[in-house]
Image 1 (cartoon, rainbow, N blue to C red):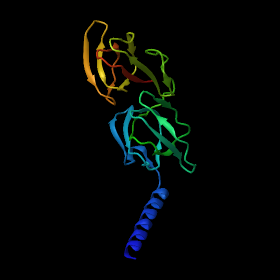
Image 2 (image 1 turned 90 degrees about the vertical axis):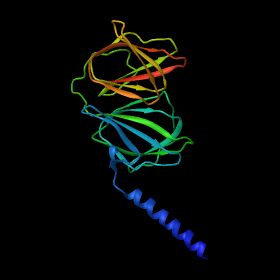
Image 3 (image 1 turned 60 degrees about the horizontal axis):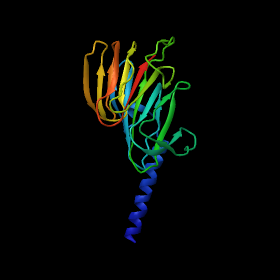
Image 4 (image 1 turned 45 degrees about the vertical axis):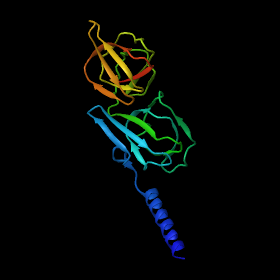
Length: 225
């Protein structure tokens, strides 16, 4: 009888905690407990989310255009505030999304329904320009009103075309490999990078990106408009 009472008390406690979470007010994405700010300046906020299998984030609010870059393979659902939970969708390394904010905010929560942790970098773009620069560095793989994405998938020994960034940009490694960056004068620097590494660049740059390793690599350059 005591065990039954204890079990009932535990179930009631869980139900109460779940009800509190359901009723709690949404928080800004930077304040959601599983979202961790790893870079913040006047132009961007880079936020790292790692969501264990079976877990949900709290409802949280995005207030800017953004770019989402999954770093792990799993399956997730999303639930917009006051709406039903959406269907599962795959999250795969190598993919990315340029998301446009509709209205003044977007509030949702994420549920990891897969078997692996959901590991993702969200790049919040703090300024949407009224007159975007028409100058592009290379072929645009995706864009929203605040930024353009250049996607470089590099086989071992291959290189991108020489290109110029006239605007600030975030360079982000979708996979780990040996990256070589070469300037027009032939000067170069080589870096061993890991999946999820990133670097903010706010000066004009002309370079090529090449793969000096033995495995395929992928780089995103997220350039402000």
